[in-house]
Image 1: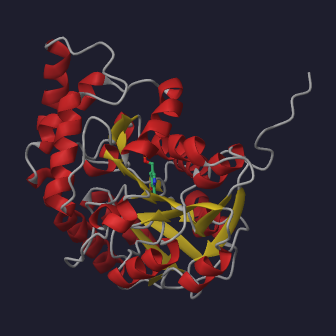
Image 2 (image 1 turned 30 degrees about the horizontal axis):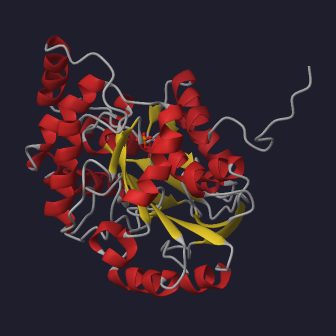
Image 3 (image 1 turned 120 degrees about the vertical axis):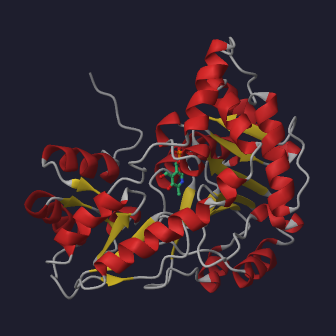
Length: 380
Ligand SMILES: Cc1ncc(COP(=O)(O)O)c(C=O)c1O
């Protein structure tokens, strides 16, 4: 039987490949972005209590209302924006599903979408399924700042959307207020929609403020803002996130989402609602991960890797030119197979495989795991 692929150029993601390899070679997995320590016990108790209370049937399509109310309160207290939990928030099975529904709901065949690379691996395939014309703009190396002149140069009357991600995976760079001013100037007087991937919104370092689109009325009115409880509460396997958008955009989003998933795992939604009632759970997250970043950098201080700045997320990039001139994928494979440490080659985040000889390490790991990995990496 012949069935032409809808995604002929897409294979298994590098995260799956590297994690499988890490498993096969019993390597320390600093590749895939997930914590290897347990979540807060209160979260587990709250989920179990929800099940025992009988919260085991479909939640409303847009999400369990107490959770949407807590999300609205968090947005109000964090970004100073009043959000209607009834019409402007939808809870989704992870951020990836929210990104998918957002793109599918507003990007039409032939619409142009500006994608900043390197980027999370779902963006390009999803836009391909939308039959979008993708305009890629590379971040500046090695600081991974956005080249706004290049963004502006790619805007046309057909531009439907710009994708943004801050704090940024894989680089750990974050948008600053000058970026926001450039963005406002570019989109004003246009119908461009912003898809803002803010899954690491609560992980920024040195007290730097996260510049959510929700802080800026001119941007919030045209933005889908996506977040992930998996990242905020150390439970990536619970795959629960949410999308915030103005009523008209959210209406279109829900038209798609209701046939993707209809609704998310109810006990998890009840548990996250309880956790959000205590803001310290997310307010303390930056300090927690800053200590992890600092510890990993301290352990790596004597190595021949050159550590690039990380201002947010739970990723640390490292250049390895002083060690080898191999391609980053080759080095990542050799590192896993021969030395027992798995990392992600940053070329995997570029459509054209741009290779600046940089690996991404995830430091959302126990101190013991970081110590074991660094003991190997510093010997290279
Ligand atoms: C930038 C970015 N967006 C989205 C996601 C997906 O989040 P979720 O697991 O909630 O789907 C990730 C996960 O690694 C990510 O790094």
